[in-house]
Image 1: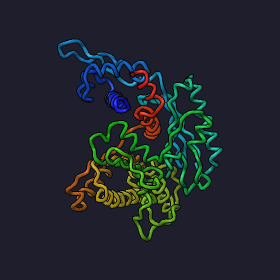
Image 2: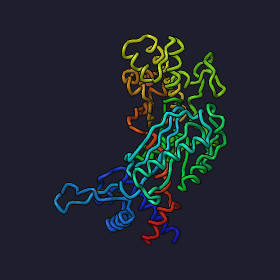
Image 3: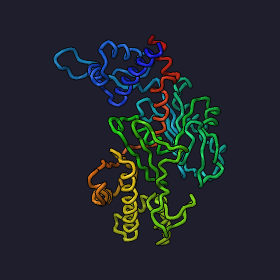
Image 4: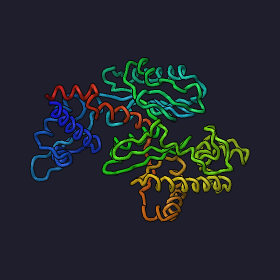
Length: 398
């Protein structure tokens, strides 16, 4: 009986994932992609529709017979809350099952400027405001996903440490927010949320190893190996921003010197330019504009950043041999010629990168970490046989 239930769950999950990754997929396509019979697929579709998880999306083009119905995730019945905590700001949003943004708000608050309890109160207040604005009922909300810019204990929902905010060390953020909001909460390090979202969206399908490299106010890597997120023994895997790239470099708040993120992160680039020139630039976009205006100092700083990234990514490729590396970096996105130059230098660097040309791409997704936090919840609620939602779907389909 347990085995039959497991098989039913696997079939439901297979159909749900196919619909989630290919909005507008038809029943014949679901049969082909999932390897299931038409009667099994039809039964699962009726179950998922009955629970408000999928909806009809019109008819497919006719191939000579009756037009097939197309399906997508239902954007009306359920919603997910996402909390994206950054070093210098806070982003909170409510998204549909299809990861469409229903509402969002960005607040300029530095994590080190408030204690964790005051910060939690701010988060809870904004969540309540957005729920009221959308007139959502508690039973419509599947949960809250938190992406945090530092090491966390995923299972316990606690924060290990954040050098810029020492009061947060050991703080049980997920449990406290769960108690405050009376909703299930999942929390993970931001880059693990990022690679989890890529997995949820199908980017990792059929790949042995996929990496997500985040270059923003800090730098980190999330790894998906064999379909699983690799966190290491203590949630510290992927702290690539604290690899030393200059032995004579600047001291870092982590206790090391010459760390990668001091020279390649948004914050590091700004600090370098302001220190060298005496300017007071406030965003990496200001630095990008100076490059576009042929400012020699800005050009030199970004060129140096690319050199350090090449060295680090090259070592990463030799260590983990990934199929793909997805990079989220605003300044590389805006300076595409610099990104192309980085790839040329990387691929010609040595025999390993030359013979193993890993596919390296830039991510262009808007509100990426809001979607990543939402995916954290959806991965747990839609694809875990022990989740209340899946137990309900299974029980009604017996």
